[in-house]
Image (cartoon, rainbow, N blue to C red; front, side):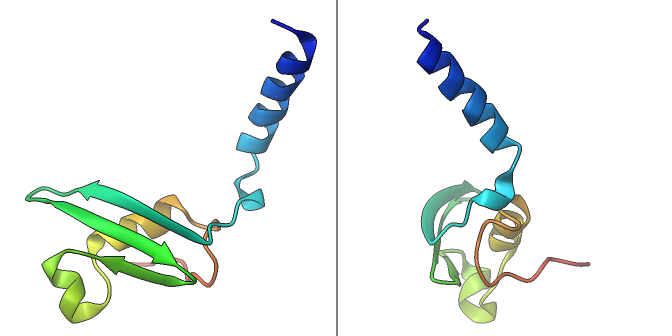
Length: 82
């Protein structure tokens, strides 16, 4: 392995320990729920989910899970509290 690649791998490991460096502007994901798969998207501070609960409440457990996973990496988010 060449030395420049070794340095890049080391730098990547350092970056991975600093998630605050990452800010998502948009993303799409498929969430495998207990009953069905759900399409989740995030763009410009707005979350969307294809599940039935989201359509009436503008939030759901799938989005809450993504907010916890991506905490600090998406803009305009409030922490999830119980």
